[in-house]
Length: 337
Image (cartoon, rainbow, N blue to C red):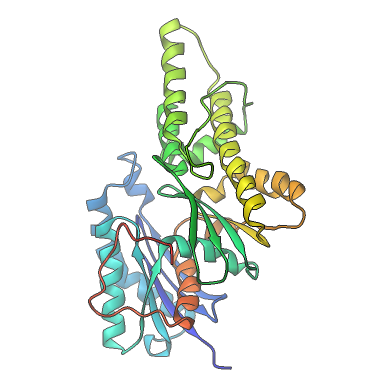
């Protein structure tokens, strides 16, 4: 059987990434040029700055990936690219680069959904089994996704306001932690205990999420302490926030497992790197549902990268997904199919 080689491009936010994937599982190259040191001075990603740096980096990153894999564009079976969702200017850089390569070398163009990429990052460490449930947790997304087979996606629940990663970054900011706040909230929480009562997320749909109320609860708690001249332990507040947020995630995950009976559940997205959440899934859920296989991606595959787009792009390629040269960035791209 002929090997399949996909060159993948990811530029949906502030990482310029290019990977080369063999047969949907083997990573031959995975190059990421991050902008985190630029944006930390602003306390968050500045879209105009991000897109400009993508323009500066994209050619260099493509060349480095090909060099690492010791391959040429001519060797590729297709060019996969994140079409959306994400920051429109950032997406545009990746899409234009992919279209240029596909046109210049007469290769199929394969549009990929960013969240499909995060889900398929788990295929780098395990064979995916269907039906599958994915808990997607990142700075821009919080979703429960049901897949009855390898190329169908049904959104069971989504956030009604803030994504969990966005809420964590904002909590980090009010605690005076560096950017990105969620990473430092996790580190700080290890030193504390969840002793403070915070507002539990509530939604009309039992599988939907909401984190703006919890975020506001943290802000109100700090303001209340300041007004009363009372002190609080930042590490305990960080631990209390994480305990409340992650229990809300797991509550909905449990309901979805009991309703849909998946063979496998995967964790996906940047917040999947959180040590507390990883422990809760690997211990609590695994013990509660022994018939379900739980997959947690390696830390290197949690944040944005092109390897995950290459894996999802390979599946899309084999299912006949193709884009034409009118393809444009789609910042609000829907996942369901």
